[in-house]
Length: 338
Image 1 (tube, rainbow, N blue to C red):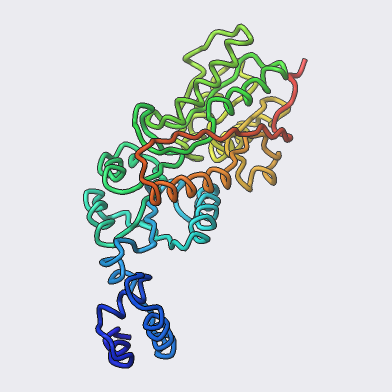
Image 2 (image 1 turned 45 degrees about the vertical axis):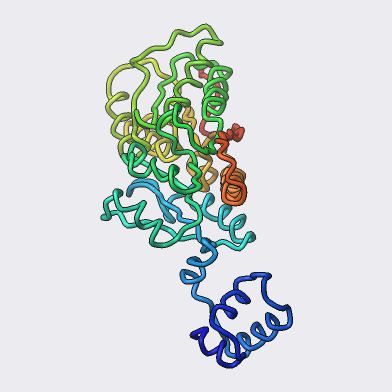
């Protein structure tokens, strides 16, 4: 529906109709009510992009996520983030525009944001896109919040994450309290801040128990079930004295358990395994997985509220919020056998 038809029916100019539809106050209330009544009768649906040219707002938030691995709506944990963000931003009158084109060059993402007229951006980045400067620079042009994807601790951006160091510390401490002293750490990658934080938490717990960090007990599974399987099978195919494995993700923990089972090593009777994330599958795996629960809904809601505040206030203050995780003890960890 063209607003010119509304203007014709109301006997006013197109600019007056535009002002009435966009909430301007410099027109008579009676004229505004008349225009709104006619617009409703004519079943007028405003063009969001055209309205954005006037108001400089489209009430649309751009959401970018990373590469093919562990990202998007099929992810066992990112879907929780999406739902919580949608709840917060939806109540505030915003729609989410998901950018998931894996073939598009990230150089064009800034242009896309301008073309779509987004009011803000939320970034979930995985894999190689954690280091993509074309995505990092979006925060220079749009209100932006990073979620659990900060590649470098020194970046001055708005960022929400789990307290990864605390979670890893609690997981490792749990194994140490069960009597384990040789604990294999299967870390994520060598890119993201969260990956390094989970290694630091592991080291902190070892130090508290007077155990020196052993570089040979640190492997990288790239947050991939398949990679963790390969690393574990290669390590346990040789003689060793490891009695527990702490993985930086539940998906890797599942790959670890599968590899141990294929080698005839029982979990937890022979080797205990602890994960990180507490995805839905963790409670129904065999055995049910001891893991670190990330408060994903709280993280997503916090990110949504920060973004709304940035859009409305634009105070330029960078917020770095850490949400405490919780250790969930299930059946995949037990005391060291005598």
